[in-house]
Image 1 (cartoon, rainbow, N blue to C red):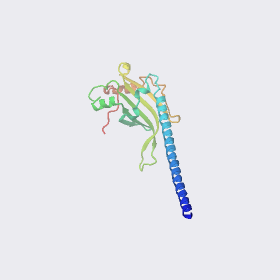
Image 2: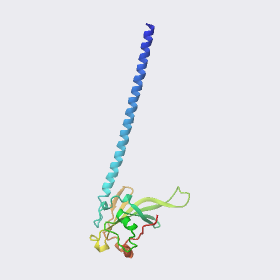
Image 3: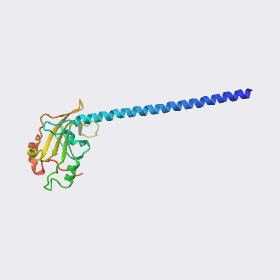
Image 4: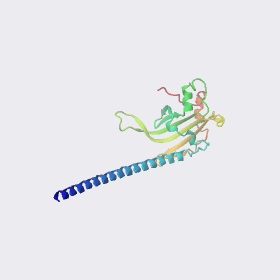
Length: 206
């Protein structure tokens, strides 16, 4: 009888250990699932926020009728060149149509850029780096996107190019079309490089 009772107690203890391990596994599994769901929810919010921001940005139209959506994806376009003033860093990017034309020799070969060419000048305010071991200024706050698109029929009075400015406000994280940017707003400034199809910057060697 004593041996039977001892075995029964041992069996109960074994069963309890099995049930405990099973419960721990269930709790662990639930925790993993809950964590995964939470992470996915956060990522979903981030994606939706980014999509909302893009939707707001790409719904803008300049006073001259140029839609920011014409330049959708400019964030990933290839760099053409860069420039800077004492306070502003300017990075010039272009769409694949224009980049291909650059690589084919335009405008140095005397040919104009093809219809559909688009170029964007992205502007940042500058600040002194607090990390570099030497004196250097780096981009600080993004401030403006100056855009140009080639459509000879639509912009026949401004050398075939349409111009627009979209200002960015970091505090609100919003773009707004510049009220003083008609479709020919950059024509006068670019006229000195008419022989280069009104484009200042060559495609820089890299």
